[in-house]
Image (cartoon, rainbow, N blue to C red; front, side, top):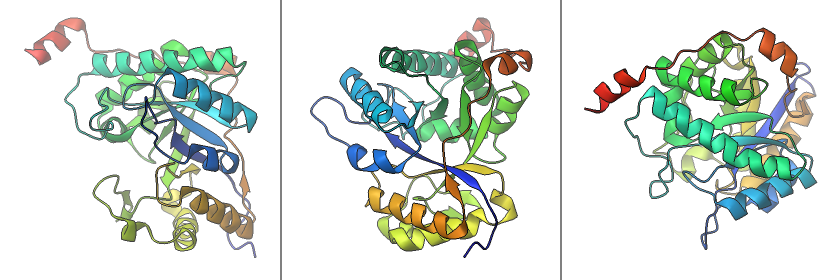
Length: 274
């Protein structure tokens, strides 16, 4: 029975994180169940072959493609805090978006969104200066790209100020404490079974705090990732909710609404490094 009214939600997944001989995540299993794919761009994980294969797999399943940009930290899988300035974040994001877009264009597709990964996601959702740097990179590349971000975060505010589309995100495979997601330091018991996690997700999305959420994430390397996505789809259907990728904004409208974004001057960046 539909208890909470009609709603459209995107199901996104962080994937494409294999590299070299290292296989990571259940990408082939989750791709038919999602509507948006956040593909690693070769910094925290991924490599050219994996990017190409991930883009092709997403295209075959009609899944929207996004750049999953992170710190250049393979050893820590992009989950270690690294001290960076705004210009560094801008350059990291712009380089990675461009790298993935080469494969997106070669496949005859169009990129839809950008989502930071791991420690970069945490810091840009908390720090306004770094959030503005991400927005500057997205704006420079394609102002029609959407940004995935935590509700009420610095990245949401910076993106809206820059005239960029924002998709607020909820994590179905991470625990929440007092309304905040715990990205790191959790165990399998904190996640629960696919069924209980799906029920918890619907309950939280039905509250005022998460009323603006447009996308729900399950990571491809989470335990039983495909089962979690299937359980979410079943539970959403029970609420009368539909699953679909976010609507891509019109590029002309995005340009018209654009506000200027100012990065730190190079002299300031050099002082911070000294």
